[in-house]
Amino acid sequence: MDNGESSYRRFLAGDDEGLHEIICTYRAGLILYLNSFVQNIHTAEDLTEDTFAEIAIKCPKFSAKSSFKTWLYAIARNITAKHLRKHSKLSVVPLESQEYLADEENLESNYIKTEQKRMVHQALHRLKLEYRQVLYLIYFEEFTNAEAALIMKKSSRQIETLLYNAKKALKSELERSGFEYEE
Image (cartoon, rainbow, N blue to C red):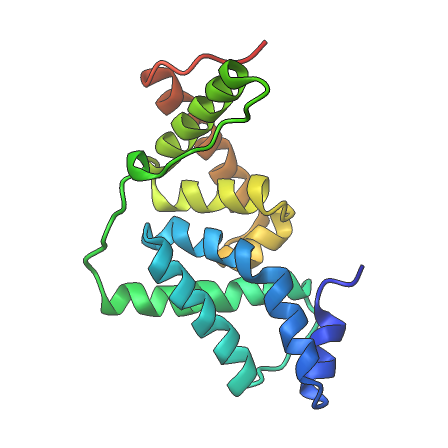
């Protein structure tokens, strides 16, 4: 499966279906990524739309120096940075207000897993922005260290150090909140 590059080229050639494919493929991941910055899912959705509008209207050149996904996420990050500079006060939606659904077959097991996920997400949101960002890119979006470095505008060595420190900070935060590791 190609990573969106051929869809983008088709869009640039006049096929609107190419843009539709890009949106369908990357929308959910971009929303979650941008939510790690703004802490508001509705704002993240708006910023995701702004990202797709940017590529649809301005048609920036994709040079293939990185993967299409890396390039797209870098554009989204830049749009979000502009937004954050304009709106320095953030609106935070507490994680506790979100509802989680349990599987009827194994309520207890699913409850424990859901509770652990909630604790991990809460701990993630207590970390520094750079730590949240690097952990999200590497572990949730499965970018390589090199791709994360491009998105975050850092060197590979800085990403390795940042990732090490972020994992250490997350572990410390989880232990502080009483998280119990599965065996």
